[in-house]
Length: 174
Length: 170
Picture (cartoon, rainbow over the protein chains, first blue to last red):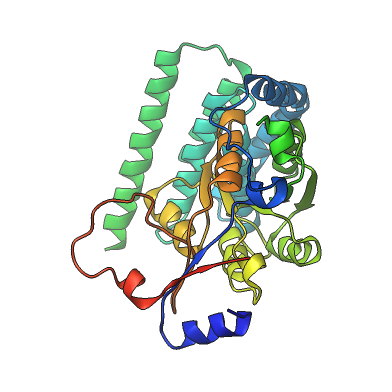
């Protein structure tokens, strides 16, 4: 079966099922035994890698939060560039903070991203909501060992605030 | 089989616009003793690196510019070379809602890894795609791994089996 045959088959509206060989078998030979469990020594080495990057990331995170604070006002006042930069930073934080032992910072950043993503079609960003989120991120960064109940309540309150604001904006838009 | 000897002959392409994420993934892949790792900052760079180095596995972010992860997956799956277009692709994304995961699946990804990532989930996903390949499906509208994960009983005509004999790549 040549490459051209495969493409022709697809053009005729046919379905083709290909059995793809295992990379492990292709690279290591047909008689390899598949791993049945994760090697704890390797996992430890991976965790050490994360730990070694943690302090460097903490510095960067602190700078990113400072930048979020600077961008809050212009983003809420309609400056598209600032809003885009604010989203990029929040998106970066939501993807990385949890891996580096800052899950709460990541969850607040995730909520801020959710709010901005939901606003693509329904209107301008609200200053107070942006500020509440950025403040929550700043607090979570400053006090990583804060009361988990308080953190959960803050998360829930922000989620509710986002929902209420978005519903209100949708209704106002008709 | 240790992770070291399993991943040592494997090459991986990492595509992510976050420098920290690239650094993190590079460090974790080094810890797994992956033989070669290539780093790209966006979809365009990723495609170029893929064509030049032909890595065994691709790990890509979803949201990037220019050329996001979904676009990169579609372009990789469309390459006119079966060995290259069937390589496992792991998408790493902070967008974990059903719509985003379905969009990634329909673009042709092999596995999804939600951010924030952990050492164990990366290790598990990489071992899965390296050791347990899934059948690859080609139709007019889809080119990628079989989206049916479970081998459950099916009533009616199995159109996939009826339409095409299985082909083994050599």
